[in-house]
Length: 115
Image 1 (cartoon, rainbow, N blue to C red):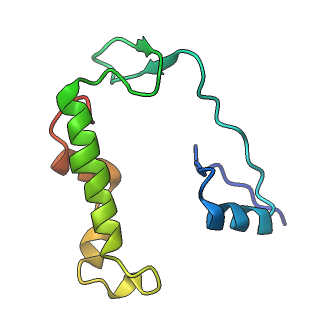
Image 2 (image 1 turned 90 degrees about the horizontal axis):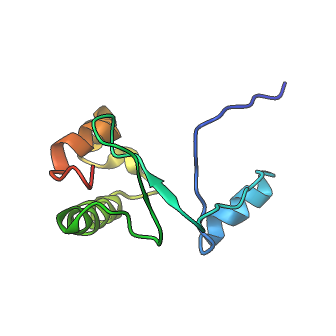
């Protein structure tokens, strides 16, 4: 039987050659990401929707710095510490498996803009 599951939005970059090859092998249908025009920033229920152009959201200077330095670089650093062939051997595997993305965000991100 055919099983279909919607996992929400998933993105594949144009330079993700290995992932693109895997998608092709598995006959995964890809859709273009529309990124031109006005964007909408939903910054939570207590703030009004904001629209912006370009690629950088209006989250303030501190939010942008935190997003780049403390989030993207930190995640890249943490990912590099895990052996992709043996992730179950990482000494912090139980901790990493026990937290959600939201839990990690609440513990590690300070500015509302980056959250």
